[in-house]
Length: 185
Image (tube, rainbow, N blue to C red):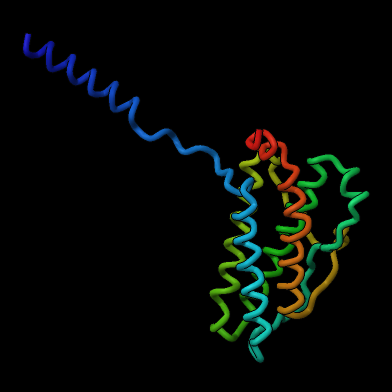
């Protein structure tokens, strides 16, 4: 009898614990709140300002391909969400490649933390795009001949492109993301 009662209480305890335990982690969706993107933009701005004060050891060893940041709104609106996402993901990938090149070519270690932070933020944005049900991105084999790119040769140019890309195309994509619109309603 005591054994049955203990089993019953144990089962009841498990049920109560199941009901009260924190839920499984939900997919990452904080970027729908643009304050998160604004935080990334502020860190990009801080890195750009810091790099402008660097006098030596902060340059690129070779030119890097980066995304064009200008937005023709008429063309942007004509693209479907998948095409817009592909353009943004390509840009994020290009920026990660260029920032990694900058990180390895810098000899002034005082500014490494800024570059590391910017790279981590780009990886976070990429993860958030995946969580918002955008198609998985497959990077191209080469940046040669990639449409919508241009070359930068200085860290200041690279960080300016990074900042403008976040403020432009990334923001536009997230403002119109289907998953974010559903969350808002």
